[in-house]
Length: 587
Image 1 (spheres, rainbow, N blue to C red):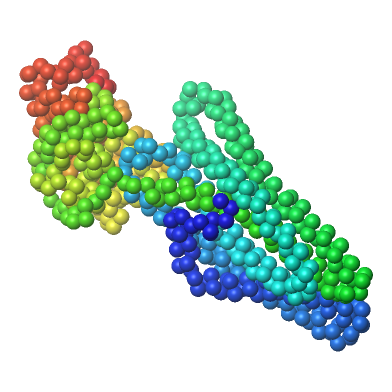
Image 2: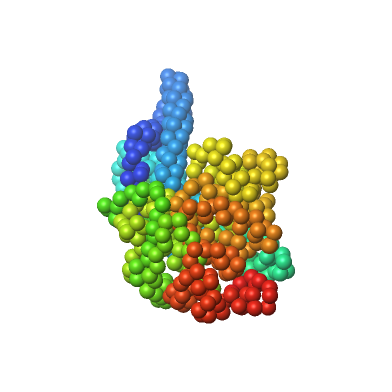
């Protein structure tokens, strides 16, 4: 599809809607384009009086007037080019700003399952690389195409005014030029899609190897990763070359066809001058207009390539924007009030793709109760707690908070009730203060320090170079594992949510760090409805109740002593860890 404006899809219409929102600046820009086109046509028009009146007829009056006219024409053209360029660039940047923020907003609104399917580098490439390609189409290609169309119309008027017969024959060649442009446009779009996909894959590779550079070095895989990177670069080079071939062919074809037209004009127009039926001024004015005419026509051919690349990028961006979310909010959803909560699972089943992860879960947790979930890895414990904040939705059954199905309350108010501390501490490249106050940006200094103190983090924070204003680096890379986890606990404390989920919050820590984090967790759990997932059974012995999850089912439930007395799955797990007198790290 070479000229997409003739076949508008819904995505193209959405882009045009964004463009139309700036109609005032666009209208002024188009006036400037008309000025530029008029100045270009006037330049070709003045070739005849320059030759006939000044050089052949030696008219001194015209010798004074024509230079002044040329100065005025080029001044107007310069002003028009500046204003038009600024306005169209402004509009293009505003459109891309709107598109980029809309894309990021959509990514943030999509459920956790989407991020499990997609690669981080690919999403980053959509926001940066693909949107920039669309910007080139909007702010450069659209601008130039409109300007060139106006210029073509102005020059066509000049050549028909000078000699309509010769103009007719000169323009016969133009329709033929569009046929190869159509085919080249299709090839460019296909090649551009391949380039963007290859660039996205490279972004994925770079994100993984740079973020995991410690593992690369530890296993001595530098040479292996260098080879993989070269292979990806070679693949990108091959698809780029295919795009270059498609783009590069269109211009020579237009050059050749333009040469045919000019050759005919010289033969036909020269014969008329020799026969005395036309003047040299008329011929050269016509020739100048035709030469100027073919230039914007060739540019339109090149701009078609840019448009095709932009449309390919537009499809990739809208693939994300139009991705449906599996987590839908009910139209009549109500707000869940902040208060102590009861949480219950009623015959909950959950399937991920084809496999059942949870089967027939019936479980109730009272206000302020601490429930521990234990079992072998892969049993479904994390999936179970991920259903509470609706990171996923149940396949069958229902989850209620205070007897209300969580699908009938707003997602925002539901998640306001829940604080989460995971095994892998997730922190941001920002100050300690901003990381603690992440879920509550309006928190006072006193509240931040109080949360840090309760999380046993205040002493090490004050020992940092700038204290609470210290930047902790990407993912908190400047802190130890225990320090990062205590900041995450402080972040959960300051949120002060009535429901707490602790997913392996201490499993990756050494004994000394675990003791401090465990104390912080005791402060965090006090008075909250708490779900604790742990492999280290020593951390769950004091839980109010323990549920053993095996193969997606709850097979046992009770206190530590009750489960030990019955000698079932929990007892087996406990003996696996403590049977030789030492605590193991994993069940």
